[in-house]
Length: 148
Image 1 (cartoon, rainbow, N blue to C red):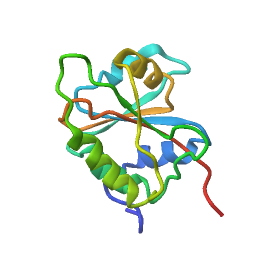
Image 2: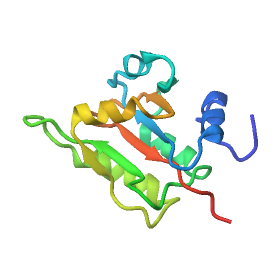
Image 3: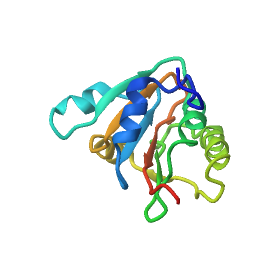
């Protein structure tokens, strides 16, 4: 264990966050997300980490004290609800509550169509599959520059 680092952050996740550079993206995926098949493309594809039993909001609370969000481009991306599915506003609300504790000026996430989201996730640095059970609980974060 390290002082000041949440026990929700595994050593592999800490390593991935440290390796990422400005503009790199990572996915906090819900438990239903096809992370392993998206990442199975080999070189240039993200690798998958597991955070089973941990919600996305909990992991956001652990990650954001260590991680600056991008201020130049959309730093937060969520999946758009598929027509016919019910949208649960509590998912985004819970995420934004966790985010704004550390990034108070952060704007709400943009939304991408489901397949466009999968394609974008396939370009991410890492996919973290969480224990989040709510539908459309996927979030892409873009790394920013650490302030002085």
